[in-house]
Length: 207
Image 1: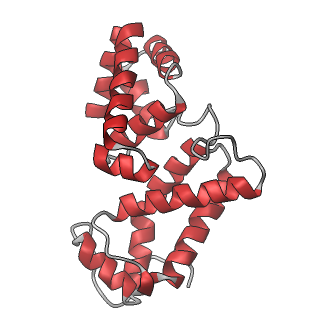
Image 2 (image 1 turned 90 degrees about the vertical axis):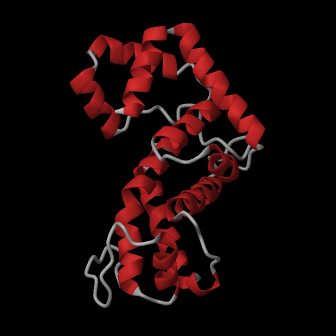
Image 3 (image 1 turned 90 degrees about the horizontal axis):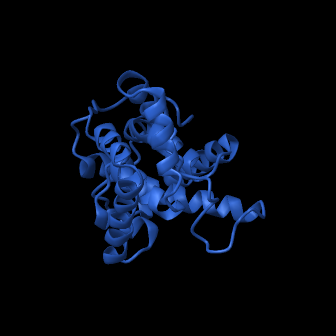
């Protein structure tokens, strides 16, 4: 079965379906549930992957391998509370594994490159084009690039993927207190260098 197949053959699954029940349906071999999970979260996975590494072929391969392995090992998987959180974590591991194979893996086993997490997603561009001038966008971009890669990743997961700080800490293998501190320093840096950019930033993620 192609993982992009969208026909729901045996059960009616909606966005309101309880994630625990959906996961159990998938584990039981329900291909409609499997297809629904792919359709529901593939865009999130692709956007996150492209923030990690600017290589669309690598990201697409990683997502493909993730779902192939997911189906193959479904009976041995543990229950999940958040499917998106689980998939993001799996994708991160898959991408890092592929980068290692390509000999592009860098020193600390965490980052992919210092240019990752640049906050240039289509959602951001649409909002900024409508609500913020080009000049403000440039200033905002400049301030965001002052953040470390780790700070940008935490902010991305928090505001774009709507993960909680405990989830982010688990996802990145970090101490929870350290995660809070990194996020706090990131917001402090934004306030320090450009207060109006911080206002734009808050507007961007609370719209």
